[in-house]
Image 1 (tube, rainbow, N blue to C red):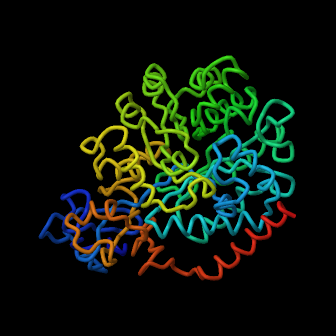
Image 2 (cartoon, rainbow, N blue to C red):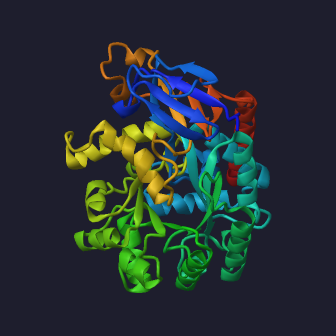
Length: 453
């Protein structure tokens, strides 16, 4: 039988993370089918050859924690120069006024910025469902499909209002039953279990200070029944630890165990304030942790103990976190931030550029429970990013692949997701970015005016 599948040879990259494919890679449809050593040729003739001699070839970056809607409140005046709790309290009333159009546009902005920075898979944590915004996740899925990016969208939730000892205002919370019913609806409607899935759903109560203990436990049981993953913020600040002790009588990791979340279905955002025993328990359980360096620095939350968590057995990934605590969605920039911040903790020789790339690829994939993405290998999904070194910041650089981080690359030249080019010549395919940005500015202004009156 004749093989009509389309084969592309990404030929002779300038540099790459592994010499096994120094001669490039061959992609057939949406799968990597061959690695070419230096000076080698494909075993079968390719239908298309892409000259990558001016490009650094890396696996597509994976963002394992984000809040897309926060692109509407970057550098928001009321939230400047504050730590996490007061920062949240200043922004919750603003976010309570989000509209469906705002969700659609902010999602497109966040995903576009991620794509342009070499990101091919993005996880979002959306937990705000005020009246009129009940279908926020459905809106996000529609936008992701338009852009052709792979997504893990987490159905977040808040059920513990200010009058119940929680942090969010009542206008932003839902009942436990509303949350559980919609969680099941989203999984049944959208979640793709198969390898190569473009859309997956996870369940993600916002944090211990915004949901009830009953909801945490019920969400964990639902995730186990439907075989999806669990996600939440945990141990981001000392204030959160004190809140857990006051509200629940235990520290965050003890609370996680009490509600049935201490297992390898779970990945956490931030994971900063753990003691040695807690790190050991997390590792033994296989709980993943997404390190969010820019957000942790901006809010002065602390440093994630990445190497200690990995040594204990926890997968460690990277996320840009919300664009109101970053205040961007640039994934290659986040890899550089992780490299620099973690060197302060562990030293330059322990935190190599390869280690930082691993967090943003294989580590994030493991957090999301994926073994089909996150690396360039035969049988994996054809998710790749190609960077050029043609800007002034790279002039005189030595190792091209190290220069991507050390010299501070900000924009990919080409990005492929599932075998389809989504970025070409530094531009997103089939998207009027200027029009999208103008719409975003208009909506951000509208949201700010509704707050400041």
